[in-house]
Image 1 (cartoon, helix red, strand yellow):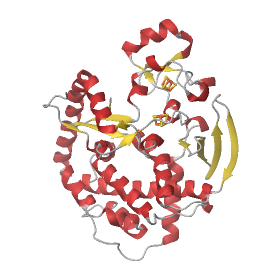
Image 2 (cartoon, helix red, strand yellow; image 1 turned 90 degrees about the horizontal axis):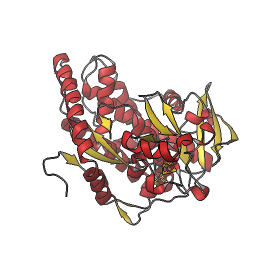
Image 3 (spheres, rainbow, N blue to C red; image 1 turned 180 degrees about the horizontal axis):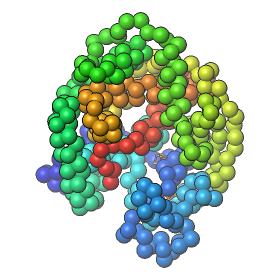
Image 4 (cartoon, rainbow, N blue to C red; image 1 turned 60 degrees about the vertical axis):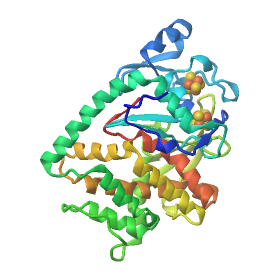
Length: 373
Ligand code: SF4
Ligand code: SF4
């Protein structure tokens, strides 16, 4: 039974069922943190298979195969060797509990298991996760609410605050237009102005399509930039191969990560050859439904808040949020176009789902005001 006084939003989970397909193993590439109460078991039983990490804070984590592949405990057929003792992070996947002004449970749509139905009811499992971690949630929520109070006070002082629900409503009314490149370009233009913008009801004047495609490509490459290929984003494809893409020097390197931590280079991709596609047929509903989900996510609003704070409260929260939604839509279209380009596909229903699978984990990794449990 969930406590009635907790401001809890589980709406992202409603109506979703899932089943983990263990041959995927995507969540075992994330190097889970070992929480203090889990540490003793690992120190006693597997002292050689945990390491100390200094970033983003000092903590213990599970080692990776060869220091760079999947989790050391991922066994043959991608089965977890310590399933009964796997850390908290592994137990909660594909859920992310975001703590900001309230508690919201988000579903990682990079998990293939959430797309094709299944035996687990996401609403029940998400509620169970909250129930089992209620003390830690209450403690962290008290801290994140304080962060939000400070953020809103700063916004009010700077005269840039707008209620979040109003921003979401304005975006929600126009989501149908987010599948059109001229509309997204117009929103981006307006968001960069010094004046406070309102969400437009249609595209602006004619756009320079070549220029837009070039800047979306640059944005897409930036989102795939990493120090090295092992830190690059991973896309688990329908055959459960771990594809890694590393943007470097204006090009794109493509490799497959093997279960033993080694890499097979597939080749170089010329990003100029990737045609920016827009969703078609049922792909359009998949795309808009994903944006509707993002528009409800507190971590997404928290990302806009993070940017406002980072830029010293110079930009309106509304401009920043609308700009973030448009940028995200373009970024996703480019990522989905990359996957479609490699597989000879289109952004129909299947193509759009693959694009979101390749994208959502990175989206959830973005900085946000608030914290994930
Ligand atoms: S990402 Fe999802 S489907 Fe893949 S192993 Fe993890 S829980 Fe299972
Ligand atoms: S402990 Fe098990 S479930 Fe967790 S990342 Fe390692 S192999 Fe995967």
